[in-house]
Structure formats: C-alpha cells, structure tokens
Length: 246
Image (cartoon, rainbow, N blue to C red; front, side, top):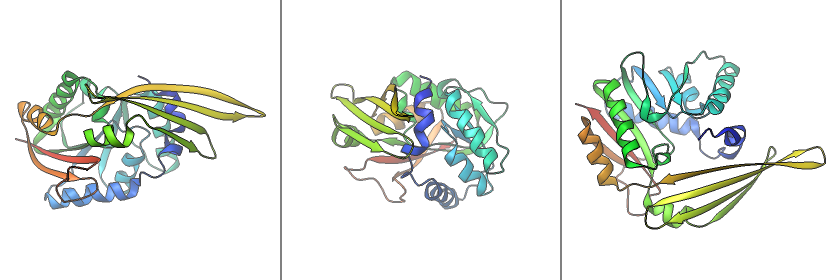
C-alpha cells in the first residue's frame, strides 16, 4: 500500500489530531519513565508531523515509513520548518537500521495497519533487535471497541478547503478488521478530480499484543488511555502501550 492518494490530503484530514499535544505527552511520558530519549525512531511517521514536533522539542529523532509519497510530504515540511531530518522508506516489519536506538515510538494506530499477526510479530522483533537494552518502545493502537462502535459500518464526510472526502467503513465481526475506502474529490477549474484509496485496519486483543512483545524480549511496563496516564477503560478508543527492552 503506497497511500499515494492519501498522502496528498492526509494533513488536511488530520488537523484535529493535535500533534503538539501528542509530542508533549510523549515527552511527559518519557520523563515519567525517567528515560532519556536519546536517539529516537519515529516508526510509521507518515507525513512527519509528530517527528517535526519532537525535533522542535530537541529530541534527536528520525522517521521511517513504508510510503514514499508520505515521506515526500514529510521532507518538504521539515525543510519548511528549518529542520534537517532523516527519513527512510522502510516497512515496519522489515526495518533495517544503521545502528541501535534508545527509543522507538509508533503512534496514531499505525500498528493497526498491520492486518496479519505475523507482521505485527515481525515488526516487534525488528524493534527489539535495534533497541538498546533499557530502551523503550512506545506505541498506540485503536481498540476493538473503536473498530466496532465508532468506525463500524459508518460513513464520514470531510469538506476542507483542499478536498472533499467521503470516508466509508466496513466492519468485519469475525476478524476485527475495518475495510476503509476513501474517495477524494479535488476541484480543478469547473470540475472535480476523483481519486481513491482502500486499505484495512485490524484491532488486536490487548493481551495477545502483550504476549507478542514478551516473545521478542520487550517487557510491558505501562498501559494507558489516549493522552493519559490512567489505565484505559472498556470504552477506550485508543490505548498506549509502553514496553522496555530487557
């Protein structure tokens, strides 16, 4: 999946994400862990919004994403912010770094984009391989509750200055997957140009995820609600997992 069409409009459609607040949360979480971020990898960084915010907070950070189109936007945004950041095009389950890192973050439900458990396990294994002992892996996931009751079989419409987008979901009860179809309509003169993107997200059982982490030498030390330091409840839409390399 190249996300080439999505990349053009991703930032316009995610203005409500609050990247500065998420960067502050990550920094506060690292402080709570008494962990010096050191060399930090932003895994599945997309268009680099969070990478840039972390760099502004003086973290030594670089980004990896599997979409060259997303990274092209990220590189341009970094330059516009006067930052020289490294971005590498690699899939999460196949990362091959130049050396080890002290911290890995993977936010905004990127893990859910891996729709096969074997790929999640491979991604965790690669993170563990390149994470220094005592280093931390911070990531979040959409929950089954969100997939079933929030995304579900619902359709959302976004009308921005840049694009008109119809977002359609198809929930699969058996697998916990949501099939997502995005139709983009961009004005071109007196007509509209249409482009589309289709992909899946899968929600995983939390305990199974913790087991996969343990199998690759990553000990779970924290489980939180989104942008919170409290334990997630049964209706949490996103959870944050903190694992430590033992």
